[in-house]
Image 1 (cartoon, helix red, strand yellow):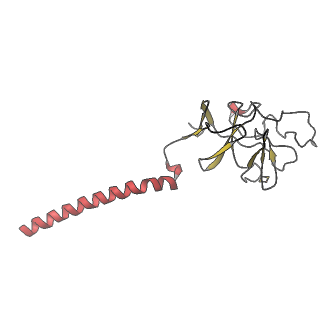
Image 2 (cartoon, protein in one colour):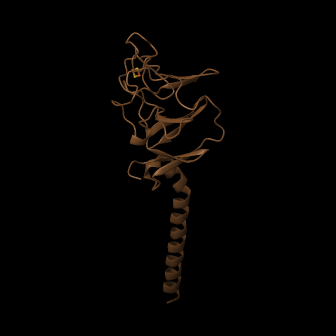
Length: 189
Ligand code: FES
C-alpha cells in the first residue's frame, strides 16, 4: 500500500516537472521563433520613427518580407520637376512623370508621390529585375540608382530616361501618423 502511494506521488511530481519544463521551454523559444518568422505575428502594421532623419538621410526597414526605404527629402517635394515636354534624349527627363503606368496607392499619385512632400516612402526593389536600389545623397540632392543595370530614379522614385527600368519605384500602403512617424500597413488594414 505504501509502495503504491509512493508510486502515485512520483507520478504526480513527474507530471508537475514536465509541465514546468514545457512552459519554460516555450517561453524561452518564443523570441527566437518570433525573430525567425516575423510574418507569423498578428501585427498588420509597422511604425517607423523619423526623428533622427536629417534632410537627405534615409532608413531601411523590413516590411512583409520586403525592404522599404524612408527618405527625408531636401526639399518639400521632388528635386526634378516633371517636364512633360522633355525629349527622349534628356537624361533628366522622366519616363512616367505622372505615374500613370506605375504602382502606388491612389493617395500617392500626386506630384511628390507621397503622403506629404518632405518624406518619400518606397519599396527598394528596382522595377527592372528587382535588384536592391541604392540611395545616394550629396549635400543638396538625392538620386536613387540600381547597381545591376544602372537605372536611375529621382527622389520621388520616378525613373529617368536612359534607364532599362520602365516603371517608377513601387510605393507601399502607409499613413503619416505624426510629423515624426509613419505607419506601414498591409493593404487590407
Ligand atoms: S535590375 Fe535594376 S536596372 Fe536592372
